[in-house]
Length: 121
Image (cartoon, one colour):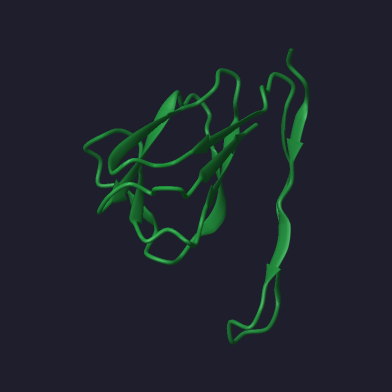
């Protein structure tokens, strides 16, 4: 069953040397969204993440307890974008229009006991 999803990110950055900066995104809305939560213990190397049909985006949360560097790629073989290094987690949002899968590369071994969360919307 599809429901209307509306995702809005609010927050702020401060103590970066230039005061407090507000973050307030426009809502991402979809009437055909299929909300889905995927929790993965990343293996060493390429981890293909399949995007549920109807999803328009994903919120990825990386645990700062991980000691593995990670790179986001569109497909295996891409150069990719570094998204996390040892001891640095984070949460970020990606729009996924017409995307069926993407790859997270974990370098140096598996993330044993550490969960990476993918909240699709």
